[in-house]
Image (cartoon, rainbow, N blue to C red; front, side, top):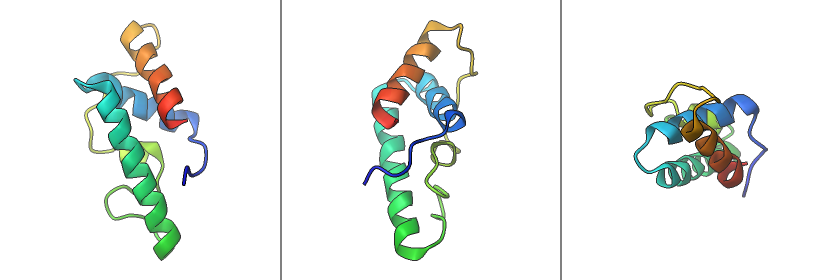
Length: 88
């Protein structure tokens, strides 16, 4: 189950969380797992997951620290590309 394609704002939230994490790949995998679990919860119960909301990446990244969204920073651009490849 992949779920719907993430919206650009969700990808910015995920990239900000990945850029702030010491291991961006592990953070992206964690967000992907949370997203899939929330989507399965929503399909099973018809409601939003209590912790990760509706399965959007911004809802899944809500409790994680985030780096500022600045595309002129190389590490944020790299995190954004990684988020697109892994999560998109």
